[in-house]
Amino acid sequence: MAFDGLWVLWTALFGLAIPVLLSLGSPPGAVRRLTRLWVRGILLLLSGVVGLKYALQGWEHALNTPTLIIANHQSTWETLAALVLFPDVAIVAKSELLRIPVMGWYLKHSPMIVIDRDEASKALRLMTAQSRAAVAAGRSVLIFPEGTRKPVGDSVEFKRGVELLYRTLGVPVLPVVVNSGCYWPLGRALKRPGIITVACLEPIQPGLSAAIFTKTAEGTIQARKAILESAAEQVELDCHTVEPPSTTFVPNAGQGDRLGTERKLDPVSAHDRPSAKRGTWRDTSAVLSAAMAKAPGMANWRARAAAAARQYGSRWSLRR
Image 1 (spheres, rainbow, N blue to C red):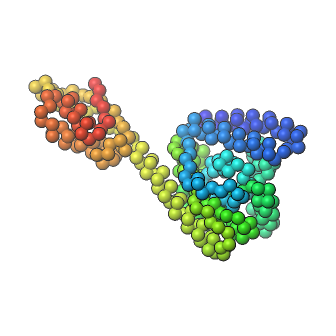
Image 2: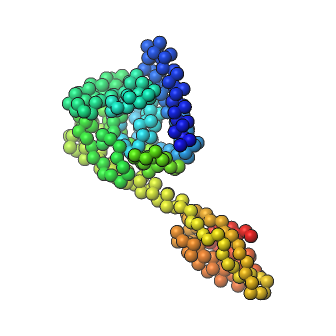
Image 3: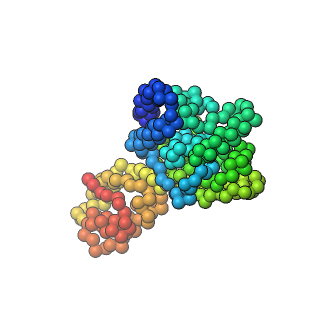
């Protein structure tokens, strides 16, 4: 909850700037610059407080000309990050966002392309007209073609509006894929540490039929989304910490008696033990035992354990 409190305080500071911007006539350029500064602060808070960062892939595909950017939608993260990743972008956003204090004012005066989803026909006309104006002004347009946030694992299915924009704007389309839902799940306030991947795919050129465009874009985004979600899941499994028993009974072979000593072992992540099967304490014990058996010349148990660590690359350390 520390992040949420800091987010509120950071946002409140930008609320203080609204009267000044109003007195200047709410210049869109200044509003967008302050909006980007606000988002950068939020991303820094996510990195420093939550441990949630991001990495970019395929950024060579991003174009310097007005583009229709289409992205899958899994969390609030990509709505915010897009304002930094694509400067001066015009985001197609639902009207409900304007009700959010401070943030709503900045979105309205950036300006973004705000639509009322309850009036579908009117919303499509306004979206088309405002998108044309944005492209004419040299701005790219970003739309989440699924229409709303989707849980991780859901298939990609576009709503009708993106076909209309593709046909009307006549500009290249940049597909963007994120796996933010793996770390900022839909419907949950909890945010998990990790690295969100933002992947730009090869642009789709204008001139295709609506059906071919939709099939191509949906298939391309779905394929990369599955890869990114699977990679995030694998990282989570590999970073799972195996908890061994607090103590283990080890023969004190170097002393020539039948007594034993209890020694505590430090757990490490499963991916740091490449020679052992992941997930159980028994697997690691078997690896150590096998290595020790191959070192008959060792004088005592501690030397045998050191030999096992050298042979198998283990980072398990021993202490009394």
